[in-house]
Amino acid sequence: MVEIFMKTLPFFALIALGYLAGRTRFFTAEATGYLTKFVFYFALSAMLFRFAANLSFWEVLDGDLILAYFGASLAVYLLATVVAVIRGVGVEQAAIEAQCAVIGNVGFLGVPMLVLLLGDGAIGPVMLIIAVDLIVFGSLVVILITGGRDGRLAFGVVRTVGLGLMRNPMIMSIALGFGWAALEWPIPAPMNEFLAILGGAATPGALFAIGASLASKSAERVSVAIWLSTCKLALHPLAVAVAVLYVIPVDPYAAGVMIAAASLPVAGNVYIIAQHYGVAPQRVSASILISTALSVLSVSLVIAWITGGGVASALATG
Image 1 (tube, rainbow, N blue to C red):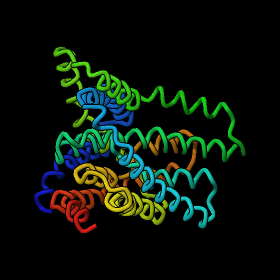
Image 2 (image 1 turned 90 degrees about the vertical axis):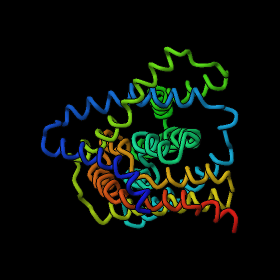
Image 3 (image 1 turned 90 degrees about the horizontal axis):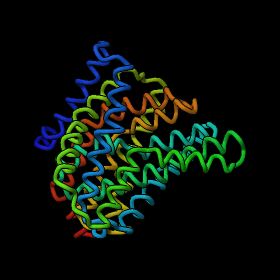
Image 4 (image 1 turned 135 degrees about the vertical axis):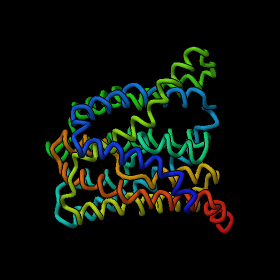
């Protein structure tokens, strides 16, 4: 546990550095916005494309893995929705809270950290998780919010969702990378080196941007934020573990990667959606802040369990 914590500590130290820079106003909100744009549209996209394009696509594509992750995530999503409805909130707020419960910071935090800690083999499962999160749940939250407001699902909503996916650089870079890999084309050396240099800026830039963006967030509605953080940091990885170890058993290594990815804190893009539609942005802000702070220990615990043989032992006993 101590060894894993020491390995994850540099990642969270970069987040803390960004938070300090934002909190002291050395890094303004405008500067954070531009850094996030650089990472999102250029550095991270280059990293994801290069990773995906160098994979053996037909070996990475695993229907059982996708189904297990989606099923587990949907179970937690529905639980968070039911709890929200019992509390008396509307469809829009329930959808945002459910999004907090299952959408982790896999792109900005998970890709660099899990690949370094668990090896290059983590790339494939992580890519599939990002695709499910963005395509399925990213579309679902927009449909529920707009449908809840209008009382019906208009064609314009579907069109907006489709265009949004096509304009998302993470989706496009993964799709293009998988397409390149499926064709089994080698990446030309100069192009590969260019992508490696640009993608190398993704890890420090993304982690610093996470911290700087947290500096502007506040912990309001703490009780709800703690519940949503519990869903994301504990219930989500637990549900994924049950799914990939017992319900639809997958390769032990891939199972470990999936569980680790599910243990990551609430993603910043949930806040962007909440702010854009004006649906409980402060609640999401608090969930991101609290889950990120708690994940310093919780993620280390999960990865320690995975790398310590917990996944293989569970499969053996199952």
